[in-house]
Image (cartoon, rainbow, N blue to C red):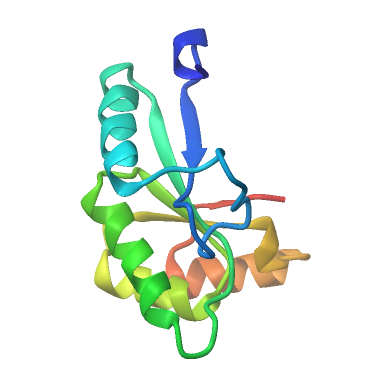
Length: 126
């Protein structure tokens, strides 16, 4: 719907704990995301993939899978909060843009600069 009304970017997430907006009917399967990315790119819009929660102890593989899926599905950027996951994304997918989520608690310029220097953060959601 947003794309049909001229949006130049959309953000989305998986239907799981990797997404802070994990509400029924609101998020997508990987197949849905693949289709959505293709439609967004065909309309000249970007797709921002939200992986904006903190990995749970013993389940970090689920968050790694989300990062890998974002890259494989053609997302233009990921929106992330967990520094460990940000490091994983930066190392595994260096061409994938990383945006720091509001959940990342970058509350002052020094924190933002640290994230930019360490991980190449390109945008901060405040």
